[in-house]
Length: 598
Image (cartoon, rainbow, N blue to C red; front, top):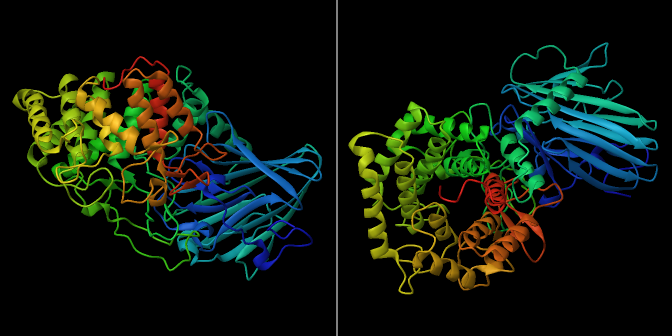
């Protein structure tokens, strides 16, 4: 028997899903929130009404709450995304035939109301399924109250601060005093059945028509995701774009990942909450879509980051909540956590200074200027960022990897790249803008004096002579030319010291073998592909691209790290910046008209 009770009426603890490897989950999202769907039809993670709200389905990290629609008996699991969307089709081959469940959050999302659509179809033969709804707001603390079924078979309840409405489950029966609703669903060959779950922090409007919601969602995804046919791998490029769009809310902010607390390394304490908007990641996404053409996600990135720069100036934080408010400090939830990790929400990143973010912001704004879409607010934001670099570039910062304060070489060189890009784009006016190239030259000269390794390559910082994957990025962004000896020697040193089987590691933590310290960093693998491409080493660039493209799970989603030996994803899922760099690499290696650094 599978891990779900399959014979007779399922009850009690038999209905609780077990954790799956991270690579086996799919994401459905509507921009305002997302949900992870497991291979057995179990939704085990969803926060509502927005990304950083408390979870209403928290089973993934050991809290209560899940929503399962899956077959009874023995089956082989599978699934796939509908092209150019985050509409997922769970697919199971059972002993009776083939059954699918079409899964989506109605798109685009309402900031106050999540509409979770599930349509079960008996594709071949009859289908016998079990449906379980166990909502538990507050990361599992708050079970439903006031649960009732009206004369039309529609269930309503309050769950924490959320209002709940569930249609299509008239035959469900409550278990454990209404904590859980369970239904046995039988379909004849060719039949389908719709389930619609609504969760809202406001009064629920009129009941959702499933057919209309599905049509609207299909249409919206077709309009939002471009063809990207000129990229190296159009299907994967479209999926990457769809993931980034699904993670981007109505205010323009793109969360770094949909989840919290998923461990980067089992039992080593590297657990973080990534349900917030990192400005650097937002810039990566904007520059990636600019490489692929003038696309709406570039405008979203500029809109969100410009607002933050104009509001906070040189004290802009590295990350924000999706509405632009500060991120709360991290705290524990007293839950078991995903196996190998622990429960955690909030993030300490607001206490950090990350100099490189200002350089990335200038690179993003320069991309918008080249596209002809940078408005007056964007120009003012560029001046704020450039002034912040002028005033703060000598300060120690946490750097791209958010480590202890140092004079990180990457941070300074990315500021050089940003200043040169924004000056070349002609954004800005007056004496300040005329000073930007000279400021870039001064920062580069100082960095060359203090952070150039005796071998002629860049080193991590003046007091750390090691190589770092991040040091490949400044040349890609135009801080120094591609044929500069420092560029070539840095790439060659990286390939000697931090590459294994065409997978990339960020840096050496200590004397251990690379794979014992952390997983391969998938984003960096695509950076290496871009660096090899910049050097004209096309076979090597293609090999790096393909090797790292294969590091996703069956759904095509990437987490932050990849365990080469076990073929497993590590860290929060899906990681937005990995999808951004995949898209950029696909565009540039595909011969797109936007050259690197332009």
